[in-house]
Image (cartoon, rainbow, N blue to C red; front, side, top):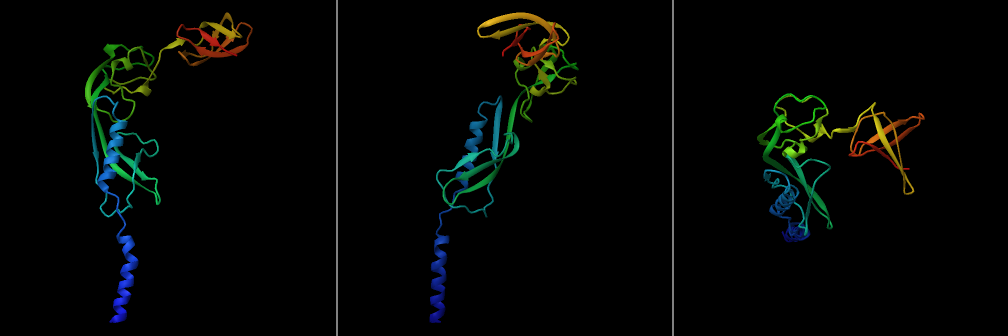
Length: 227
């Protein structure tokens, strides 16, 4: 019995440091994740609702201060997603917390079929209450007015940023003015545009000599060439 008691004392003495380890509070992890999402979604239009799920109670992590939250990969902060929380101490750790993010706002919806390359005005869409389902959905009329659909859009479809483009200021096949700027000297000439382009996009122009030059389309509809 004496030897048994001694063995038990040794066993508990060796195990006590692990049992005495201070555990990281799950509540603090959830608070860090929530604060991160609140900061990242602060500028989203509409009303933002965030729900951070509980962490599995069986998860045990050593206490750490401070802890920091982060966004894994390029996952959008919309709908069901994961928020990372990590400790950079020694030993370090990281955990992913599940969250649901909903944004209720006003969306732009095509009021009738929109053909490709039509310059949009306020009669081409209506405002409808809805929920942001993915990044890029348009919520402000100023985001659509003056833009052109890249392809045909059906009536009732929610407008997204990647559906529209700025109107062309240089048209393929048309004669356009070319400005060549070099060493403070500007030379103006003209040529045939080989592609259409919006302001700031690249354009190739065939000059009367047959030479092809590349430049950028300007708001005035000409092409600026820089050496």
